[in-house]
Image (cartoon, rainbow, N blue to C red; front, top):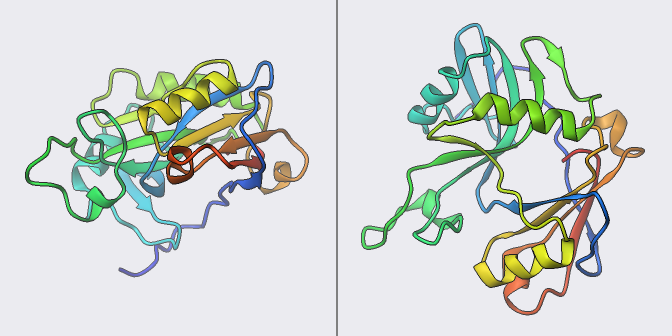
Length: 211
């Protein structure tokens, strides 16, 4: 599928640190095991752009329809398309081939950031403001969700990740901004891959900005 002609949206990416941590006031969320996509709604149409800029709306038509049904006329969301198992753990491999012998959700869009809303660029707003607006946007929706929040204590949140078998953890500074300009100066965030979580929590990933 050819890349979309829409302008690219800079995405935030994590970096590596040595161990799980707790920082007072930070937000701890589930790390989703799915396909990173930016959802752009404009002029009555929705695009689901992959990391390479390919529009995958035709691959996920029900998601595109659901996103188009959200009330705002225009928005830019950053999240992941994922499929969950019976324990509500995201399973990347099930996006390629859904199991025939195990319960699985249909593909859903798990959103961790709202970058633009009805023409208002939100990247300069604190994460706590963007998250509040995001929760209002996707409230009571069956296929589009804000990423799940964990314990307010980072170490307890990490214990929950290991116990439940989640893909990982993302810790975020609620005052952080999104976008390339804020990336080197504002806040931090943290995430850890599920495979390492299951063998002893040896690493955690931390990235700059409002990722």
